[in-house]
Length: 75
Image 1 (tube, helix red, strand yellow):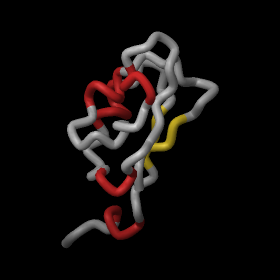
Image 2: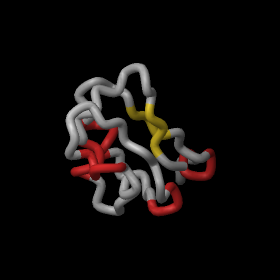
Image 3: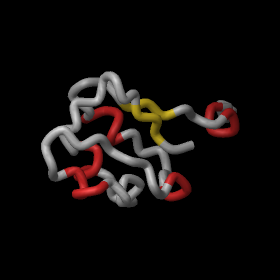
């Protein structure tokens, strides 16, 4: 599952766009460089749940809903 952006909390700082190594936010107009620009998730299938965007978001506007198969603990 790709990150989910809370539009009300998002500051448009572009941190998530800059940090994403898999270019999940690649289709963002201006590539997150314009002040106040909200990120757009254009390649959700590329997200591999590193949580870097979630951890570094200054406003807490991003969250990742982890698929159930990834939450089952191993013995």
